[in-house]
Image (cartoon, rainbow, N blue to C red; front, side, top):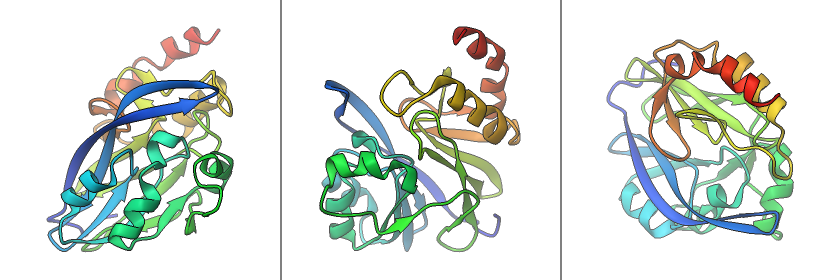
Amino acid sequence: MTGNAGLRVDRVITRGDFALDGQTFTVDNNVWLVGNDQEVLIIDAAHDPSVIAAAVGARVVTSIIATHGHNDHINAATELADLVRAPIALHPADVMLWRTIYPHRAPDRSLAAGQLVGLPGGGSLRVLHTPGHSPGGICLFGEVNAEPVLFSGDTLFRGGPGATGRSYSDFPTILASIRAKLLTLPANTVVHTGHGDDTTIGEESVDYDDWVQRGR
């Protein structure tokens, strides 16, 4: 997961609606661009394809990764994919969520636990399947410029786990995912979240027991 010196991680913030179970909320989403001056990987195409495409510029997009299938993380995906001519990848356990937004178009690729997603200039990010917020939720872990990073989608935020209590979500499951897949990562891993500010694995791990108690 090394060999990618010179990469940069850019955050694009887009605003729009998250809708599930008959409720709608206005949210700000983090769209992450990982790349160099020639190529870029996009993580979570949210709300506004034109804003994301402007941040990409003239670079070649290698892939558009969806950390999960909630509408606010994929609602710009197909239009953006057509604009930048890139494939969309999603874990198959979230296809039922995808179909609520795109009933007539499937994702181009499936993500699987342990899969390596190539980065521009060499190196890769490893897919960690972290169900709980949704059945097919994933995170991406690797090194960017020799520093460990995690793109956590809605699995882990500054302050705790992603939301549960809605359809297809489960609090014990997300806790188990975080304990087994994320808290075992290096403490200095920078966590780039799906919403809000960055954190680190070390900062979040100290509160795990409190999260467990919260669910009892």
